[in-house]
Length: 354
Image 1 (cartoon, rainbow, N blue to C red):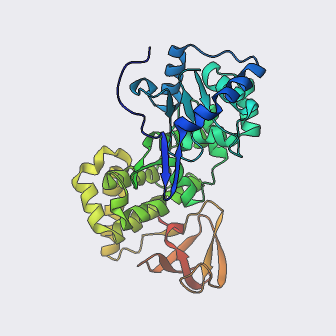
Image 2: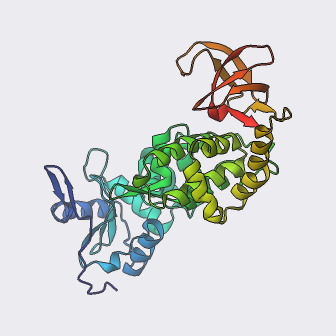
Image 3: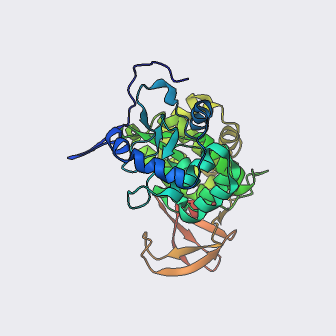
């Protein structure tokens, strides 16, 4: 039963500069047409209790808290809208119009777990399924996650950031549960057995760009140092340790914060730091020539460039696992010498210590 709570739904009015949309008015204006579309397809409305329960399940949104008959579930120009007195969810078509097939299949999927409706949505309105994960952080169905992840470009920092962070009031909060789901669904829960191994995956390499951004703009991220440690631990679990070395050397203040907080109880990050990194650093400080560097990159090779730029001339393509000599490892571009005696630069995350 809907309570008499006097709280007002937070997203029912959308404002962006001079643009203002009142969704109570939008639903009021279109309600008869929405009803006709449901009648056309003989749609059976769910009970109010099922309506409330499923919205909590998919959107983690308790519509029972609000007195509004119409409750907008997300802050956007094309939101998902719960209409209590039907009860049904309203989503428009891509032109902002009432579309019966979209309404039918979306509601059949959400409230009745219709596989047929899900197939239709994946084909005709994949954006609605993707938004369940990207906008609402839904993670309870691995088959849906597999579909959504297949539609995300893990090489694109902005696309990945939109997936694994929730943005509110211009601040980003990590959805660590989705990061864990990516490892489970995309990489079959793979974790390295030793730090000489590497799990090849675009997702983990793109994390390095996100971590760098977090260090440069710490106020944009909630629980910044904890989140960085979490993501560094994900790299350690995947054997992407070259970046951890780079991070420690270039951001010593952040490193100290992480260490002073006992690595936030991230076991693999602590193990790599204490047993491998510190030992390697000690050997390097003592000029131990037994330290071996090699190429690590999921594409199978890395480009050796003439200058410190991705647009610079390519001198040679270096195979994944190929041993190299490091001449200078300061900054983002590492100066190296190949076994053929050629000197040039490779990007920092292509180099790993053995």
